[in-house]
Amino acid sequence: SRAGVLDRYIARHPDQRSTYINDYFSYTNSLKAYTGELKGLRTPELMARKVAFEKAFQAAVRSDSALRRQYGSLWDEIARLRRRIADVAPRVNALNQGGSLRSQTLATALGVLQYAQAATSGMVPDSVLEAFRAELLATEINRELDAMILAAQIEDAVQLLGPDDPFVRDALQGRGVEAAATSIVNPSVLPDSARRAALLANPADLATTPDPAIRLMRSTLPRLRAAFQEFQRLTDAEEVRTSRLARALFDVYGADIPPDATFTLRVADGVVKGYEYNGTIAPVFTTFYGLYDRHFSHAGRPDWALPDRWRQPPAGFNLATPLNFVTTNDIIGGNSGSPVINAAGQLVGLIFDGNIESLPGDFIYTTETNRAIAVHSAGILEALRHVYGATRIVTELEATRR
Image (cartoon, rainbow, N blue to C red; front, side):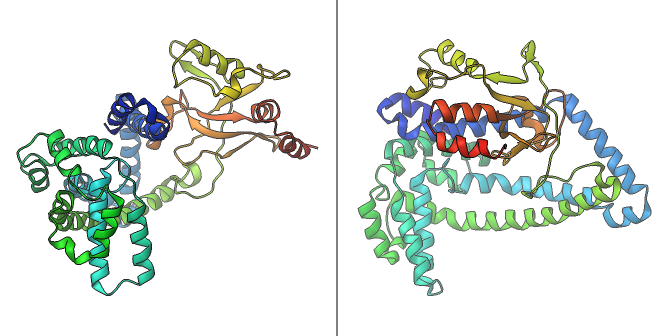
């Protein structure tokens, strides 16, 4: 994984830890989320619930002639689209160069090729071209790390597309993945910002440049564009049908089932409740005592270390103050910062996470162990007052309670 690549690089260059540690945390957080969701999909009990509900839903639609005419074919249509998406998705995933998980050398190669096409088309405004050029010039590339990332990327492409795929053959040229990645990144002019600028100043030269990264992406770009267009067409068609499926769900169950999360504002209800955890019971609240316990129990481990300003609690700091609490609110990614309001209409916390058991919540919600995690308003005030010295903010917040 890319997290593994970054972990090895940081171990090799501990002086650069502060530069890359946030990226590492981002990768491992995403990996944790996807792993938890996949684990849920592989849990027979959860899938049995999904299957039972789906059968009941389909039966309700097909038992009503009006609903059957309107929605009866949706499941077969979506299944056909899913099979076609599954066929094109590996090409999109392997050939796409967007995002932080990809080689910045190849991503920049793709960018300069697209810039050259735009610059010579005569159809793109100068202001747009200049913004694109500035973005390409601002990219910083660490050759050593980028070669490591590219090696992992080529390895993924081999698994997704097979050894005979044109992109894989062009990248490897009979070499191992690490040797191939080094042979692409190290001779390329793209990691050098000055040489990159010179290349962008003469976009016509890109058609003949021997730069290995540009040459690889030049042969890949038509396939990537075709795969992405096909993927977009299929997913757009699927989105139309899933929207109709949501309408069918409402026609059958009405307001008994809440709608899917669609980045729209909504209110979710829940109760503060602990859960069974690791052979014991997870408490409803944690306190600052627990924060310091983690710091000292894992002495020397950066993952648990407190910042310097927290290591000596100031006088008056009440370690028994609630810090976090758990609720049965149904949340998923994108809820961080949502206010938690009690029955009296008081702000009692801010949602910021879910527990590990909540990760399958993207496709099924259960109340047994799925919990939202919120930071307690009392903990926020205690930290603001005693650790950060933000007394003006505390005074302003507390004034609203009067």
